[in-house]
Length: 552
Ligand code: HEM
Image 1 (cartoon, rainbow, N blue to C red):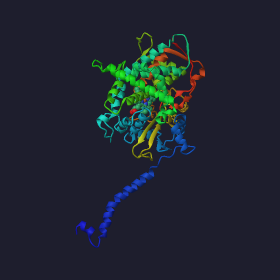
Image 2: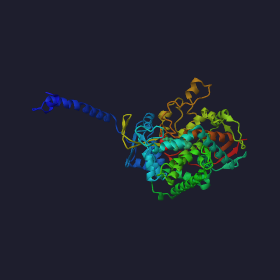
Image 3: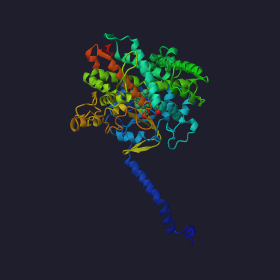
Image 4: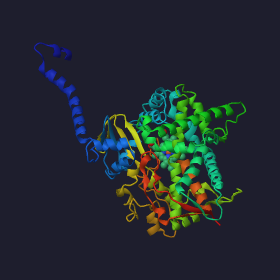
């Protein structure tokens, strides 16, 4: 009897049937058993702490600012993913280096496109169709598309933005061009204040630096024409920055007319600026290789406009939004970091003097008429204390939230992160985790809340090994813990430009000017205005009246 006939014989051949069911059923049973075992092993993330269920978490994310900061910081040190159950969305807070590395590097599961799309629609006023282009681009910014992505090469808007803007600003020549324009505008601005060898009293150090650095940041990227189109641009820009959470949440504009007006006027000015730049540079004699000119500012701004020509759905409003978004990303953290870094150097005489010694190593002859100093940037950046103070400034001040959507169920450290939830890493939480920062060698007596300028110096080398050698910066065990620019594929594309610019500006300023607070204790205020928490570095609350003079 053939095998097949044994299944259709009468009476039935029960042995054959039992064998067949066993052969097919065993692997299935095995698979089901494994699945059940795995899901039993992988728990759902526990809920983040709250006082009033549901309400506390919803209110924190809806309101943002100080309430969100408090709610997130209360979870510091959790070491497991924590769930915030919000109406219609689950947000999973990811903490600890293992979990952060295991998620943010995994770009096929932890994606940015849907969140970017929401941001450009709500904050930057893209049309639905234009936002869809961003949403559909799952290919990432690298030359090779991310695994699993099938976006057509001519629809890879992220890649094109990387090529036109981010790679250019990170390149040796691009970075030097924009950074030197930044310094030029900053120094010209300083000169207009007429500060000489006599003390001059001023109202607020933060406003003073922010004006100078804001003009420089926007002028270095867009050239001088934008401020001619809208002399109030900087004030409107900072008003836009203050309202970023309001826009992002999609609240109706009529609730805050000043927010509506600030964004509208910024975008109108950008529209006029771009139209004029196109007109002035469309002739055949325009030197397209120039990295910087008076019309476009940075070449990347012109290339961005040309790239949008390839996307019919990105109209004038979309381009205004795209440019405003880029200006915002470039300046919202940079400008305030310059302020806090300069403040850290001014506040502590011993640190300032040691940093001035380090700067001497990098000094090069100044050729400028104003006598302002010049430094070799590469040498400046190698100076350990300067690096440590800058890192400590970034550690204590950066508050950004790094958000992704979870594209499929993902298991990590015994927990299942559910598909369609939102994952979120809080830089402020990671930068304030005592269990990681206070256990570093030599850091036991330096609480995370404290600004400790030497935190990033190798304390072991300083104290035990070679106390006579000049100190080294140590980033040991900080991967996934110190993340001011994010981590992984979507890390900040402006980070090299930012560091170079911050250090150059601070060195020039500290070397050339004496600055004193009018009221001694105002130097130490750590009070912050939390309005931009999660998006950008916070502003100080108290004005800081000061006196300033050119060094003798
Ligand atoms: C102290 C200064 C800065 C800090 C602390 C900072 C921090 C960050 C962080 C945390 C992110 C999010 C990364 C992620 O989602 O994984 C980011 C994104 C970004 N940053 Fe920066 N940034 C700074 C300066 C700059 C500058 C100077 C530029 C431009 C010249 C810039 C351009 C951008 C852009 C365009 C993005 C979005 C990238 C994307 O969509 O993939 N940033 N930055």
